[in-house]
Length: 267
Ligand code: DGL
Image (cartoon, rainbow, N blue to C red; front, side, top):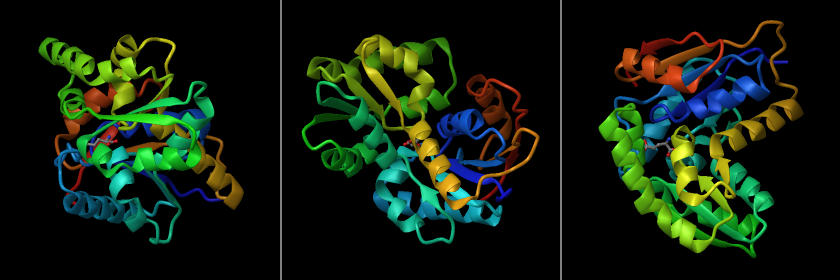
């Protein structure tokens, strides 16, 4: 038994898809969330910058006495995960659990991958799929406008831009005939409906943060490190910029009893 919190980080709002999953499958766990909103988006930055940001994010969570970390960012998981593994706590990224899930779901062996420019350039999802599902074909597409538009909140012009960007990015996936689509950036489930309209309702969408949290649950169960308490787990949110704005947007994505206390920190 270990009652210390689970740490979760992302560049911004997207990692809340992991928190949503923790609430569902590990309801007694406390969570400390870090969204690096002062430096979002990560996905158009160099690998060297992403490595540095990832290390600073990790240092912050370790300073919060977390027992484990979910790297709820496809970009960091694709580029920097290997540098975060020897820090004394179990760490789970999103790429491998997502590839395993997609491999289990596909029937026609055609798997689409979406992600930030940096994540797609790194090729980690495609490489993981090659191992987990050697017979399948993969089409990976970068969707660079999605994160800035999602972080911008929902405005009429933002929605119109999102629809247009989705058409441009996802038409090739539709033409490819994928029956399974990895939403390789944790922000993307927040626009699942827009994505679904473009690829068709028959395509299975893989929520990569949910896959990672399920993997973390397995790991903590095996280690006997789950929390045991008779109250629901708490959520502490930290951001590096605009806590009020984060709280307002996050409320839309985290339905349920979480009262959002968002504080600002420097990294
Ligand atoms: N949610 C992050 C990811 O999964 C977004 C990265 C970004 O800030 O561009 O890749």
